[in-house]
Length: 349
Image 1: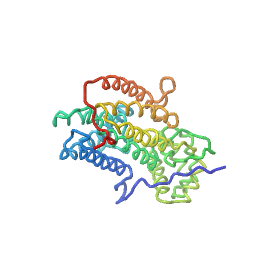
Image 2: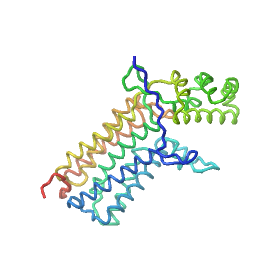
Image 3: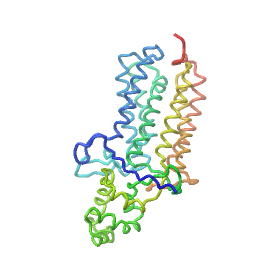
Image 4: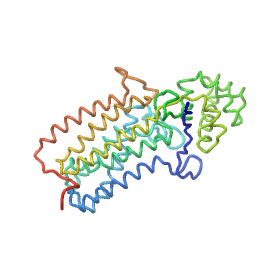
């Protein structure tokens, strides 16, 4: 029987010191924005867009701001609204800025992009629908690279799967949630943390006092974080000791990269080989993304503090159902609009 892969990838592409450095997550979005810039510039040179060449850089910057701001605010609003009122004495001071707590929400990022396009369109006298379309190809690439970065970070993990599933993965990051949701499993880590110099009796004392002592709670969680970071930095002995205690999971992040990003990119590239009315590419993206997200959520573990909702669907599935309805309505409306088709990369010169 195949042994599941033990996730041990370092989230830093370049670690400068402590918890500061260049992460793969940031590089994923940077790559998408750079590729988006060159895609739009290529379209402008072939006269497939009404956006003037000198404004392409400004437009991509607006989209970047809209994506990051919308994505983070969307996560806080849709999944953890308590972050709006959480403050601390240490950086980043405000829960909204603590991007290591949950990251960003793709649905929120879409809203941020829509707002950025509308504002830019008003300022530069462009069609907001056409600007929506221009962002879509880069957005699908952003989702593709972003989901791969989620896998690298060991976040947004999948549901438990059979141990003999060919792509099963065990994520050491799972133990970070045990103090909150699976406290009964913490005592089993005594032999593991001993490899980091924590005596078994000390560990069991922290576990028993975690709910009554803030120092025990802090010591427990900092030790778990140290275990995960040590594995990411190549501690094979620690990885092998922890592996039997972890659950095998679907690599839902990689499924999402394909279903929510890669396949949609290729599909829309093919559809836009011919000129389309402004907004059509965006509407189709809404529909395709929603379908892909609904399917992938069947493999992805829902946020533990939210769990399953009505009809055993996840928060992401309900948001995607709303997006699917919006996409169908937008397509029906925009396809009937009296506007000239734009784009069409396969159009003869």
